[in-house]
Length: 90
Image 1 (cartoon, rainbow, N blue to C red):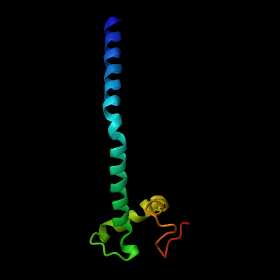
Image 2: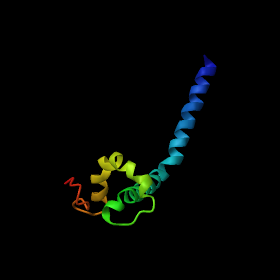
Image 3: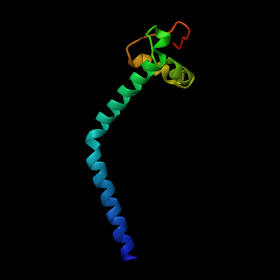
Image 4: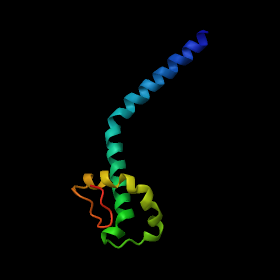
């Protein structure tokens, strides 16, 4: 009984310390991930926007999967409407 209480106390203290240590870095990690996602979206849809893509053979099958996120992406990039003639999302 007493050993279980000590283990629970150590686990709670460990979780608190981990949260306190990671809190300042959350926004930086989230920003870096968003930038990577934006670059990935540009790579996937670059051929449709007229930018030559050396990896278009490999990224073509990802387009239907990423199409759901396309609207949020082009809004975040500062484009009020979809840059693709074939795809109107707004």
